[in-house]
Amino acid sequence: MTFSAVNTDFANYPKKYPRVLIDLEEIFIVGHDTFFDSISPTSTFGVTFEDDLTTGYFYAVETKPDLQILDALHVYNVVDIIDKDKPCKIQIAWSENGLIASLLINDYCHAIFDFKTKAGYRRNGFPANNGEWAKVNDRVLTEDLINKIFNNENS
Image (cartoon, rainbow, N blue to C red; front, side, top):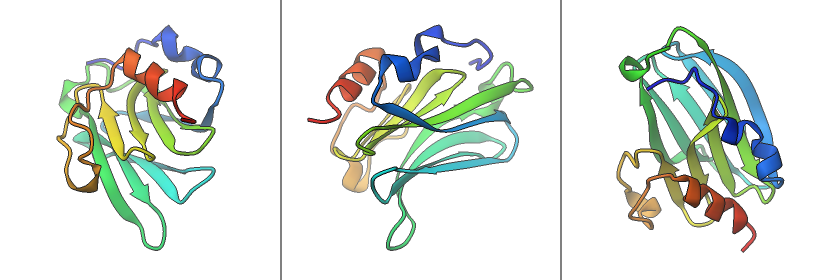
């Protein structure tokens, strides 16, 4: 897997999905201890991205009354990244209603949490659902699913 090539389909993410707000944009290097978080603009939900030197994970969290992890999505294994020494752009974007968060690395959407439907989606669908977030069986994130999620965000 490589993160060095920019996927131009998502380079204009806010233009393609005008109700999407980029809340966080930073540079990081895969395999370095990294932690980024973002809170919904309209609720107590939040998301966190963590690279713990061996894996990258995206977490859905509830921030009040106490911090609670709701779901976790595996993004990558460091050993599988070809260009891990090159800086990567990370972005966390929220839907206008603050109930959908997406993780982009080098302008490519890797994961989405839909807090309204309690569903998390990742390119490889790993790990399987558990707990209250077990409402969807298929967690694989596709371009069609991204379009469906963002076109139905207010329904």
